[in-house]
Image (cartoon, rainbow, N blue to C red):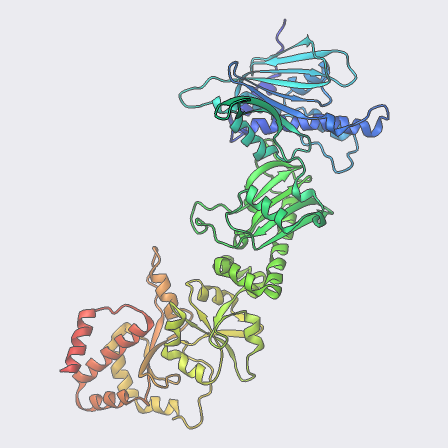
Length: 626
């Protein structure tokens, strides 16, 4: 029996197939099952045009059988089979796809499509097998043939007895080595897991002889082994079912089965598109944040299927980072796959799907916010931070997508409110959207800087997360209203007419304030009369874009670049402490030095900033007491 050689280029390609094209050995089974499914599909297509040929779907199946003793794994199908010439052409010439040729010659209908395109998946078998034997009998033929190969050395084709139409592929599984174990591909549980992972939604039954134990007849305590044929795959995917047939429980069950999360999803989105690009998708908005969500280990992405066959576990390109919490899957017949079917070519189809999915997620979140407020707030507690990061990243390019989804605690409402709700309540004379930043709402409410805003009856948004101010800086304005921190130098609030003229008082006390500024040296940019303080003697405000809260956050980062806010020490000239400052300025400069340092450190403590020299501060307090 003469051995035939692969062509030189085919031989090189086979070596590549075995060693480098596929990243995981287990995908060999996906490829062989997909080919078997194609073979059955071909009979279906023939039946559409050949009245003499009937197609009873119950008669068609794929079977996977393992023989540990002989180290063989067999994949059998009841498909169209191959003639001697087809074995020669399809298996003897690597990358010549019989499925692709069939696809080009036949008009495909009724939602069926041929999976194989490249004709290389079959050779993935050589990643796990020393010998691959293919026995096939073609539809309408009385003869069967056996194709056999040990890899790059070539192959043989000889006549073979086979009673039924179809193909049987037997793999002689490799022996274990020091570095690699191949036994797993003979284990029942492992084969079932691979089938469920990659081929669960192949439209034909994938059968296996499954072993189990049951009580022995006539005995209550003894067990006996038994074997029965089981269908391993689900066949009909939930996303191809009519939405009207499905219940909330069906979607929750799918969420659990696919291990998308241990919680219950707040919302599901079922998408079916049949247009320029055809695809189905089921997306979930989780209720709880995964434990590793903000770690390097977390991977975003949706499961990607091509015609029901899993291509990628996590297709990151289908989700923007700001919606990385979304779970689910996408299945499309129109994707351009690369040769290994493991990676996707980044093309127009993928971008169109991703764009549509992004829009659907946003619309669903807006609907949740509008119609199911409590559910949205639960979601927001888990993932609101991610939406804010989405605004901050990419220099605010996503702000129009996300800004209406943001919520912040309100000084008036004492609950979470949206920017739109805030702006809709603004009085006509209010120029800005005011916000106050701090570690907690309780701490913010005690800030001296909030006094004048509260007195005017203006609502404040409380920023308690480190990302809040950074995100708002990227939004800049909302509905033509600028954001303003209550610690900003100019709040744009007109003080009451009976209050002393601030500018005049600043000029009156210029020498005192200049002296205090010199005492504090480079710690503050200026010392000024405060327009915002009512009951407190002192506070810090800022000039410029960097606020005190931002300085605290930046200084806590590993790559701290020593970014500082331009601090202004504001003095309440109506507080009795100011009289003590004036007296000390006129009579005792050492005491003025003491008071100035005490007031500055007091202002630092109010802001939650560290005191540079705590010992000096305590000594200053003791001096005042003495």
